[in-house]
Amino acid sequence: MKSVDIRFFSVEENSQPKEKKEKAPKAKKVILKGYISNAGKVVFPAKTVADLGVDVENTAFKIGMQDGKRKAKSLYMVPAGDDQTDAFQLEKAAKSYTLSLPFILKKSGIDFKENKYDFIVNLFDYEGSTALELQLSQAETAPKAPYTGKPRGRKPKAKEGVE
Image 1 (spheres, rainbow, N blue to C red):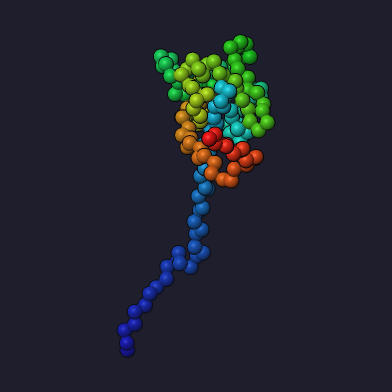
Image 2: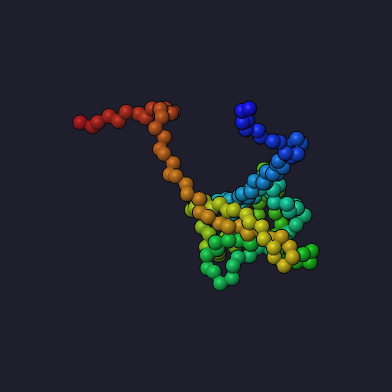
């Protein structure tokens, strides 16, 4: 008789294979951004406000910066209580919410008229409430290329030489 190699089955092989649990996809971390306009307004686009999770229409904010610094690298917005008088309210614009702070920004060393500033919004816990940190960065704008297309309008009068 020939010797035959036999592979024997186990009880586990006779059962249906276990399905692998699919991991829930991690929520993408949304970067909340905004900018400072040439008029000194802190602008929060509508998309950013929707992702904040803060009711900005009914919340007033106290505005501050890190103590002991001459130039602001971050602005802090902390929700104010109902009895606070030094609080700022966000105003609804066409597609955004704005906060007019031209004098505070100038005193904090932010030259918004000459440079464009962007900020990234970070949420943090301040004395039991969710506050916002606006981390400022100067936006690098490329110089605008001069117009090289066809000249428009009337042709200038030809200058006649005096002889």
